[in-house]
Length: 333
Image (tube, rainbow, N blue to C red; front, side, top):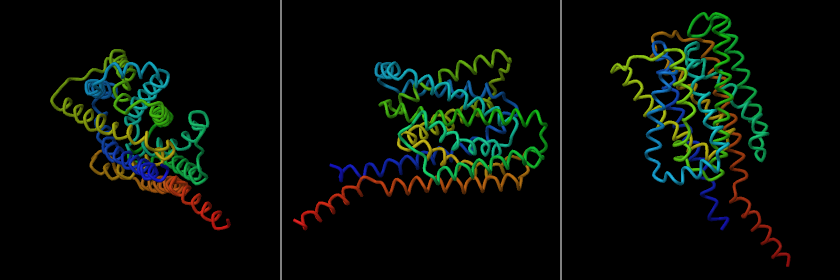
């Protein structure tokens, strides 16, 4: 039994890694697109319209509505927590793009996420400890993030000079996004452990986000015209950036440890930095490039440490060692 189960156990983390990387590729290019889009559309307008479409799609494709309702009731506290974390994550990151260039915003966010994930893990996932190299990698990513904030403070980012008020606001948005992103990862993992399917999670995940962004639209009177250009942008974000990418992420998280997911998020940085060359508003910054490289290197270190740990402790090695011990005992007899 243990030998036949081992390949499936090994495949799950690998598949989870590939799914998360697929999400990162889509999300990084989407970040640059959103960074340009928020210059003439409000963040709440983008989020509300995109997620109404996504929520409607996922609810309709979830065939067993009775099972969905029963599962939501059974896991209600974690479902509500996932909804709240999703709302904060998306609203805050869109507002961050109104201040920082996408690579800078993602660098600050992802530089914080591994450290936050490790701290939250003591409470939300006490059975899994962070590895020493993962802690080192998290500290390296945190150091790179501090370097990038210092560069922005001195006007060395690709977006140019920022007022101290804008810089403070951008940092608040990024910190909120980091905490929310870590919480999304943990609560997705917890719901998966409780037997909630990825489809059920997606069908019940965006309710709070839709209500809050609708409230912001009304309070700030930031409704925009539904021109062909705006409708096309919303459809693109909703289908590719939300429906496809978040499904990949959700499916990847349930197969991977949260700390590994937080490290893999670092691949966003390289792709986002390269995609920024397509945005004529931005001049490329050496400081941003250095920060992206350091963050990416630390991310690779942490991901490699978890992969090596999983390989060295894979279930198929234990039976082999046990068989060897049994054979040795038999020879002694």
